[in-house]
Length: 491
Image (cartoon, rainbow, N blue to C red; front, side, top):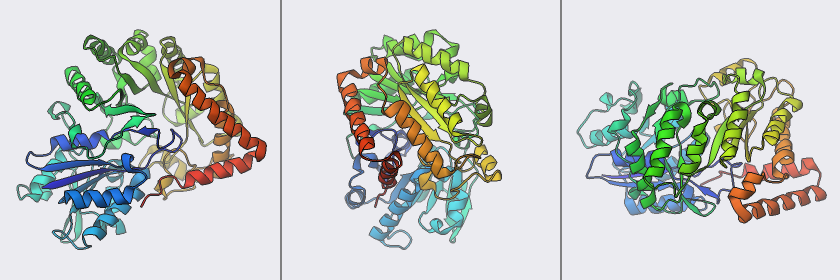
């Protein structure tokens, strides 16, 4: 059987230009490695084909002639996933197989919204949906399509029987010890990089025990934390290096839930001589602050940048988000990371129910005072099935409940009790510009990123300052937002 696995090209517009970051999809390589032997499996990561999505899909379908197409999609990417399913049907006829490949949707959106997808018009686009982790479910689906199993017995699968959708019970969480290394050799397109540096992704654990009510993670993994054994992680690092990586993004949901384990991993990376790479990962301030020696070990292992979930400086908002009072942890974590020359991408969430302009600005002031190197400021987003969505809906603060293409943290889908959604977008844009875009890079940024990075940012800021000399602030804002509205318009 020929199997084509596709990842969506959609990206978050405010992280970096789409040409700057092309990070590979790890899940599809993990699924490819878990499929039964004897099949031809092709991983098509459309982040490397953003300028030619339609043409690339047509070429892949015509070249590999898949019997099964698997599509991975997050919520904000779902519009593109729908279009791809429609295109594949048009290429191969609109009827049922065998005239065309089976189409299976998986990932976060299928996990969160499989009932809604199947009960609406979109149910005609797909033959199967996978809810939860996909490695074993897709393997059993492939076996069933070969006549070696029964759809009704495949946990985590949604399928059609006499034209009616059936939803099987969720699959228990997988034992990570049973999963083989991701098969990166199945990729059909190359070009993964961050500002020209070859990049790859791996995970050392899955899940998070925190109960933040703005996060949908628990729908995929519940509130659990499962880890790979450290020798397996080292083997995967070696796998990434063989694939050409110079930078590795560890995409764990919360790698610092067990700080002592991360400390051991860092020591092993150094021992095995793999500290010649640039590592990036997401950390919690509690995890970093609780083990002071961890930041030093991370730096020695090659961790030169981290994403730190600072979230907010307001105790009221932190309580609303169910983060706990982490302000002092944030300060300590920032100090420890910077003492060890680790760049910080600070996560910020604004647009909470009671936020005013002044409340929002307090967060930017905090980031500036603490010397955060990069700002990742998002607007609170009412993701499907999250606790915060229910709260905001009850308060009448959700202004866009249905257009999920805007659910990426960049657009305002909510209002506060003091700011409309449009004003919220402007306030976030204005403060980001004042406190980050037009400000000088931090000393650590200059030291780590070097002349090239500082020069690029300086030229960009000079251009942006020139814009303000020629136009009003509101006019510049409207022009920029109009440009962002065209982002992720594929097919």
